[in-house]
Image (cartoon, rainbow, N blue to C red):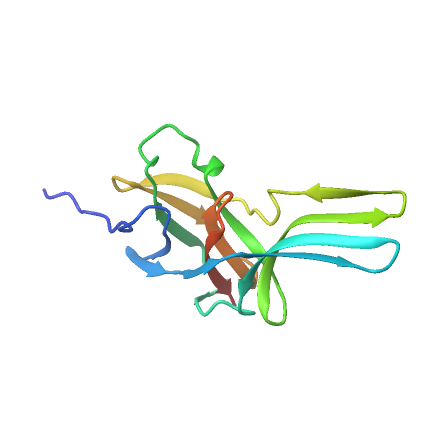
Length: 162
């Protein structure tokens, strides 16, 4: 009996949706880091990764579970994939999507900031897929904008749920 060959991404760290055995491309975006301070005397600050467009042109239904596949040089190793790859919820703006990575407050007598590298991270399960890839699975997601990426990457693979 011949063994079926799974369709895997051609290049490492490029994410696809897996739909009935076929790889569906996601929207590739590179973040622009946006810093902002506002108000007078008591100021609020934030830094965010910002992605062009209010919505991704790649859309999926909110009623279905989703699987994503990413080729990884570490797919056959014992490295925990959750230390490498994440699914995040993005905040929708009028003309962009963003992921706030730092927020803070500054007064004339001091200030504080908080950086949250786990901001927007959603639970997923991981499994090996084919010879060189990792599969990320999640249940149905609520409507919104999302991104799959390496944990600290500036390039993300976006999609929306309706």
